[in-house]
Image (cartoon, rainbow, N blue to C red; front, side, top):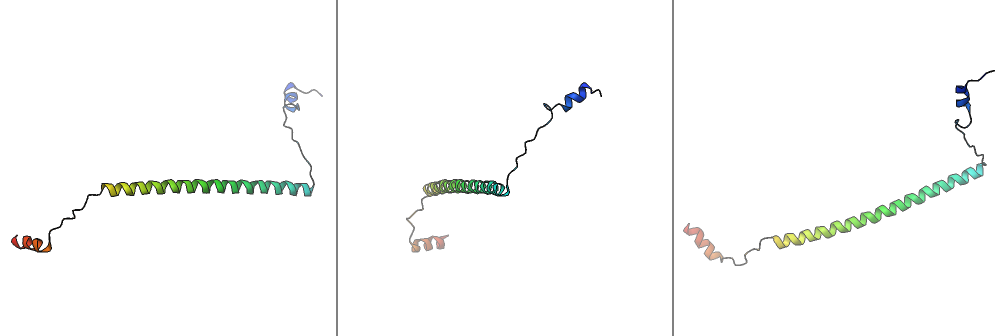
Length: 97
């Protein structure tokens, strides 16, 4: 039977997808799964450690900045007058008014 160029083009193995199939035993499959889970666990632990280090570093920076701002506020606060009038003079002023 005659095949068209169109049919040949799409049925050619060069253009059709090829799949590779691997056959492994149950014990090998379990070992592969165990290694994958261990690798995922290692990645999670590394990620947690990195996040904790970053967190502590940021907290330290925030604490330092907070301390700086508190010191600046203390320096900018108006100085209170320590020379207060004696209570008798204050009372006299109140009575005269």
